[in-house]
Length: 224
Image (tube, rainbow, N blue to C red; front, side, top):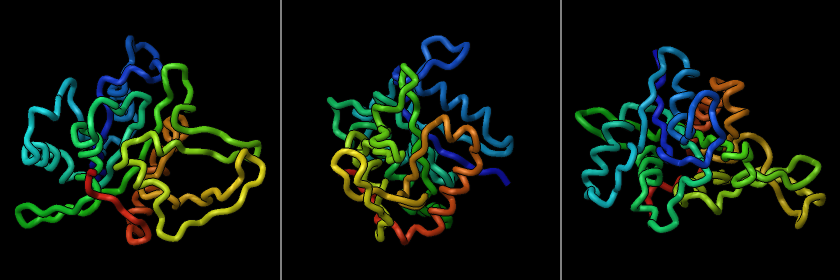
């Protein structure tokens, strides 16, 4: 039986690495690429439509639109792209936080209950092929800084949110301090696109495994 995957992304973000043979590559083209890479029996539900402004909808209309797409899915993939946030709008006026919020909630309809989705955050390379806008290497030991403070709160607060953190000290990089270790530090598990596509099923199964231990995480479900 195939998996049903909901993909949350900024449809028209041009700040991504060009894909071969695609002019004016945007984030949505990476969704199309993902659809060609997943197992044939899997199914993708796409999030934001081009130019669809939240301002024209009531909260109930938003809820209805998202329920229809997310209710039957068991995994949500969030594409992090360079211009995914519109700084001129609040989180409540942008699609991605709503899509994350509904993916994290349990909901019931017609006698069926949809549980909290497993989650992955896939960081897309920018137009120069760099991940530095969100993922920085901070020392020779390979310590990595994920710039979650630049992300939507709904995203950042559900990363590195394990109730009992596993950390170690690193005195090499500037400022030193504790760094997270292991691969279960985040409910919304982050990975670079180039790593993800090497072994897609491994990362999907890892997200599902984390979902199986959801009580280990402090989950934020409501948009501020």
